[in-house]
Length: 280
Ligand code: MN
Image: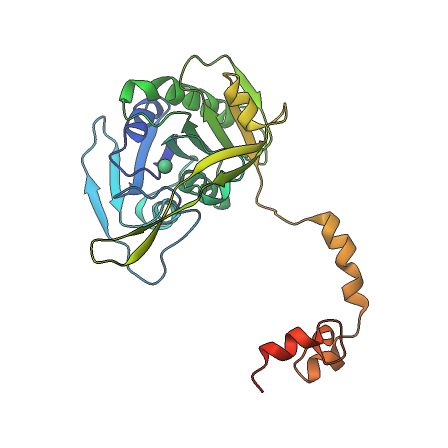
């Protein structure tokens, strides 16, 4: 058993250290993690710059590499270049703070796991509902992650799943299988001036869970349960696709020939707006 582990809080984060300690009970562990915090990196990958890899000392025979890239970079590089032989699973976490609902779009933690899933491996993203840096606080979450991974690797579902797991910071009352809720952020940007009088903006604000329906991740966590949300990659909206299918029967060639969409031509529905955009 060989498990590849990353996170987005950086290779020295307490949640990663505790998680790796637990996962070594299942088998061999290799760590490839960002050399600094990359929370909010989403599924970004580095293509304009080289990736530098630095070996990091780790206890218990764990091989660890720090990479000056994103969590997705780390898993890509790990699976395609750094790790000799096969990996059986990818685990990302334990994140400092939850990843609920629409957070999964921005989350480096989830993206690290998702990259493993893209490589065809079972993958878990695990997050703790706390911003603490105390290592002990991550232990129950790390244990649960280890148990869930053991389930996946045993008689777990096939094809292999991608699981987004959020774990309460206090007592874990149990596990709920959930769907993503809807989360938005309020008061998003702080506008300030630097010492030289230049304006800058800093993303801040608090999360607001708009959908906390009984089967959502946010509700499970709020009620003291570990939330397990199976994710998929196919974002296709089949309902909208079927409504738009009429576009396939339309003749586009005439409109395309003069480079102006039919709706944007003079006399067309949006003629004036299109004319304003055209400097000619
Ligand atoms: Mn993070």
